[in-house]
Amino acid sequence: MRLTIPKNRLQQYEHLKRDFSEERYINLNPIQRGGVLTEAARKALLEFGDGYSVCDWCPPKAARIDMIKRPPVYDFLEDLAKFLNMDVGRIVAGCRGAKLIAFSMLSETGDYVVVDSLAHCSTYLAAEAVGLRIKEVPNSGYPEYKVNVEGYAEKIEEVKQEVGKMPTVVLLTHVDYLYGNLNHVEVVGKICKEYGVPLLLNAAYTAGVMPVDGEALGVDILVGSGHKSWAASGPTGILAMTEEMADKILVRSKIVGDWRYESFQ
Image 1 (cartoon, rainbow, N blue to C red):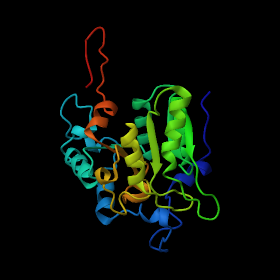
Image 2 (image 1 turned 90 degrees about the vertical axis):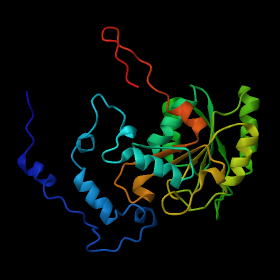
Image 3 (image 1 turned 135 degrees about the vertical axis):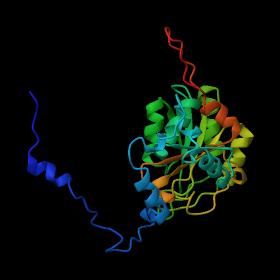
Image 4 (image 1 turned 45 degrees about the horizontal axis):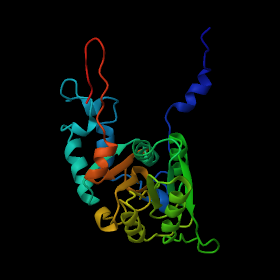
């Protein structure tokens, strides 16, 4: 039996208006400010809002968004990587999606990831989805809640002693979402280089609204949030990385059908 939704219930989805529109209020929320669309972004959103509009001019059998040149997605991803001073850039479904991709491609079930103790909940959920264990680097507590970035070495050593190998990833939140502390990435980057462990920087609250130079900071993987810091509609995520990490994270599909022998690289 088909269920019928009452008409008065459906009407709530018509003529939706935002209560806190820029026409009535000035939004000073520091988290939301970086997600306010520019005029150019609003026009692009209207132009390409239809479901398949980005794929209007896709070549036959093209399944890779990063290869689309009309509109210039391909060029944009190159420019995105340059802007962050990383080798390769991709757009994914949310910053949490970027972390999930990195964790899943670099780790196996039961591996450890070392994170700061003020990491976003999505960091933990991404680790849980992959079956990872977590070591937390402590913070100073009240009143400043500063992460002891030098403590990353100790936690890496703990993992090494406990399981006989290094953590697969180290994650640092550039600016935490609770207290707004800016962490010294270079310190953690140097530690990670000494131990040979990739550093993933969660720059959801920094990249896009302040200068972030991935290479100078010693970052191997950089993730960001479009709706927090890039004047983009959400949920949009940024995944940038070195060439070495790209070889491990952006692995091409290997599956082949048993009748038409089609592959999807």
